[in-house]
Image (cartoon, rainbow over all chains, first blue to last red; front, top):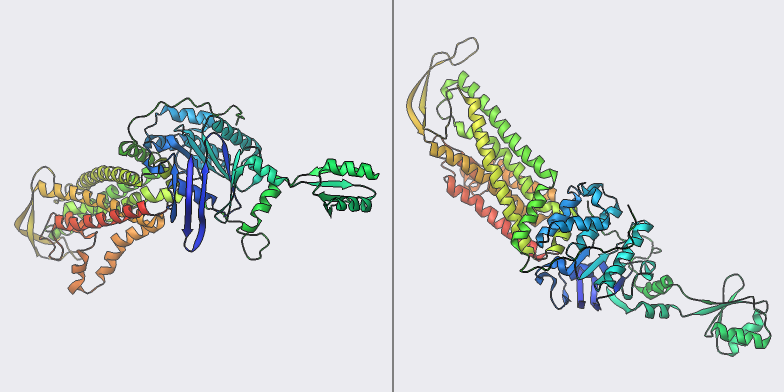
Length: 314
Length: 312
């Protein structure tokens, strides 16, 4: 259980995280969503004590992270896959981490086996692909068999197979009762993985809800109707209080009535229908709508960068 | 790579008692140091440069004495063997000292290190202890090898130093006859008086120089912790240890020495001296060494404070 209370972090005069309060529960995957620059990484860095908050507190199972006897047994975190010394072999990288928490050496081989890096254990990690680096980072997070794992944008740059692997891993970790906290700037990544969502924009909390609630909110459904007698149908549904918009390719979009109600109405009015379908806003659209006001760098704002690279210096 | 669908089959970790502390982090920091090639390259460079130049200097001294025997008095055979080690070796060990902390920042490894061990004081202390130990051992080894190789190169020249018995060298030389011009034979030189150099003096110079070079590594480490950038830390260490003293040499004689004695590199000049009167402008060897130590304590302390207080 991670509890973030009133977290505020400034870099210079720029507020990265603004009075953020939320909790992350064990036994489920909690997605941490927000556009680039929303403050996700900063929040995670404050949870780990890498950055010191200007205001607010973060406690993990009631304690500040650095006070745990064996930090690796509490939290495994992967913020940047490339935050390793490239001249060090995969084995030695994990060894120097394991030694800090007095973990047994055999654990390193087991972790390498789990992520499929056994064959390159003695190779220097500077030659690793991004996918292999991610796996090495994940091996590091799992060394201490932690109660919580935290991943920052774990699927960035991965191939579909790697993405699937990480998704399954996160689900399995949550199913095993662990707290899983994973950030992303893409809703689609969370769609099949997260049980709960924390959405932030410009450092502020926008939503803290279950995936089901988010889906329900997203399906502010409209009904697409195609009919040769459009005018007649528009009059009929408008009389029932629904609103009508024009869709593409001559269809019309009705809001405020279900597909069943429209079908029944059309039947009783003798209107022929060629198509009748409920349209759900996709989760991606719902997410974009939710965060539209808080996007840090709009692509269409001239002279401003479309996105910000968070340096992963080599 | 194989697709793993049934993930998380890691065996359960046996429960731990106690608390992760300095002992484990020391092992970790030693692993970090020994598992990257740059450590070996820089240590090899330190030994090759120090010992190699000690040999060259030895041959140089031997040839100089052969041609100019009147230079025999005042020739410091010990310092001739150690000068490369403390003048150039200090720059190389500064690279090792600075990089033992800045490489964590240049690679981003520091974020990983502080995530697995968020007690920053423990990490800093462990880094400091591992660096001090390695630098001390390597410096002592280099200093002794430089001395012995340098002496071997000088053998038969009539000047030498020894760690095992006292050596006497003439105190003054009187030159008669042709003063070494072309076509003239070597001048006739007679010597007066003797100066005795005890093995204790030589041993103090060899060990003192090694301690000086070790402390230089710590100065660079402190600068590395403050600056957190490899090139910046190395440049400032070289500036402090090497460039600054050259600049000071340009100052008026009347007061430049009074400034120089407060700088960390001055100790190298007096610690290695075994012959002749002590430098009147600098403190004697060990008080001068204390100046270097104070620099190291201040920089390592400031670095430690910033290491704990700054965002990583």
